[in-house]
Length: 274
Image (cartoon, rainbow, N blue to C red; front, side, top):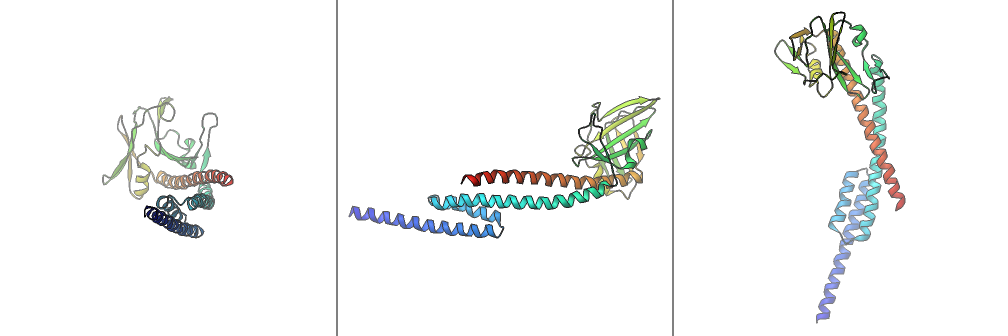
C-alpha cells in the first residue's frame, strides 16, 4: 500500500512538471511572437514570468535567457537606428540656426567654445551695460550681466521684471576671477557676472515669455542699478534659447546612441559565448 502511495505521488509530480513545462513553453512562444512584432518590453515581461512562475522548467528557462538577450540586442539596435535619424534631423536644424551665430573659442584658455550672435559680441558693446547671452558647445545657454560705469556697484545677481510687478531673479554668484570679475580701464569700471543655465534661474524663460512687454533689468547685491531691456537683446535671448534647445536635444540623443552602441557590443559578445 505504501509503495502504491509513493508511486501515485511521483506520478502526480511528473504530471505537474509536464504541465508546467507546457505552460512555460507556451509563454516562451508568446514572448517570441511579441519579439517579432517589435513589442520588446512586453516580450521581456513574458520572459521574466517564465523564470518566476516555472522555476523548475530548466530547459525552457535556458531558452528564455537566450531569447531575452536577443530581445535586448534588437531593442538596442532599434534605439541606435532611431537616434541616428533624430541626430541627423537635429544636426541639420542646429546648422541652420548657427548660420546666424559666430563661434568663439580662445584655445589658449578655453576648453569649450561658445556660439554668440554678432550683435552680442564684446567688441560691439564696449563701454556699455547690457545683458549678453550665448550657447556653449554642450548646448548650455548662459547669460552675462555686464556693467560699465564710473562708480563700481559690486552686484552678484540680477532681476528682470515687468511694469505689472511680475519678475524672475537669478541665484547669487560669487566673484571667482574667471567668469565673474571686474577691472578698471581709463577710469571706467567694468564688471562681468556670468549666469549658467543652472543659476540664471528662469531669467531667459521670463524674457521669452514677456518679450512683448517692457522689461526692466536690475543688478542686485550692491549699489542700485537698472535699465530697460532693449528689443535687440530680447530677440537675441529668443534666438539663443532656440539654438540651445536644439543643441541640448542633439547632445542628448548622441549620448543615447553611444549607450545603445556600447550595449550592442556587450550583447554581441554574450551572444558569441552561447
